Length: 278
Image 1 (cartoon, one colour):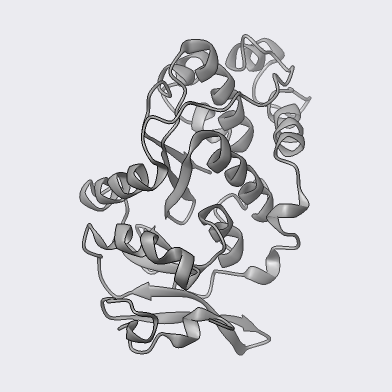
Image 2 (cartoon, helix red, strand yellow):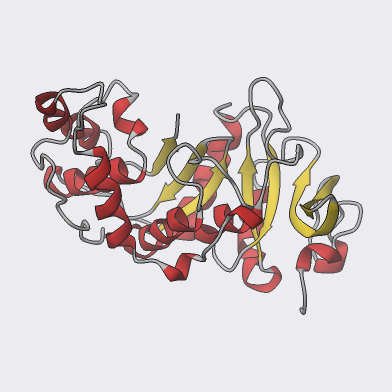
């Protein structure tokens, strides 16, 4: 199939791609007020629980990665249908970066206090103990507990059912792999920390490879992953927790698990990861 596969969708049916989709519409990239090309297809209503799994199976043929998309509490369509997606803001591609280099860079910023910090040096070092401000390096790969596709399908059903997403809808992104979808869409969830989402997709690619992670859902500033090879022991979980802190410090700073050690305890054998940027 040549070109952008989203151009083959008509009236949400997807029949030209061999897909049985609910009613929906394409969302276009806009440059200087002109519609350029579709970057997302989004359903009009909440999808059936099993639809995500069937679309995941078709990804190799369609090049469309399925997503569960949550809106904001004040505007359910935001950011998906309100002109807030901006692929032009993404100045690089996931393959341009190295995951460990990025995580080490972010760690050095968030684990180090400065004169304008609202945390003292001892408080900040308590948060990141036992590593302090020393980046511990990438965590070893996990051991698969289940096929990643099967784990992804299970979590997608759970995400539809548990009301975690506001006004959830089904999305389709033209992405070679799920990890690339946030960058391909021009999603700005971590905008307060970094506006080049390709850098986050680089790390997501690494987690796909090492932990069988799959991108399942996105909110305005939230990210949901299934995880088929989570850490199972305390030491491994602590190393993974360090990566999570570098990737999204608000997961630790803004939660009840307000130190790396407490947060690591929540990751052992956990089948899904979520992130939220303030």
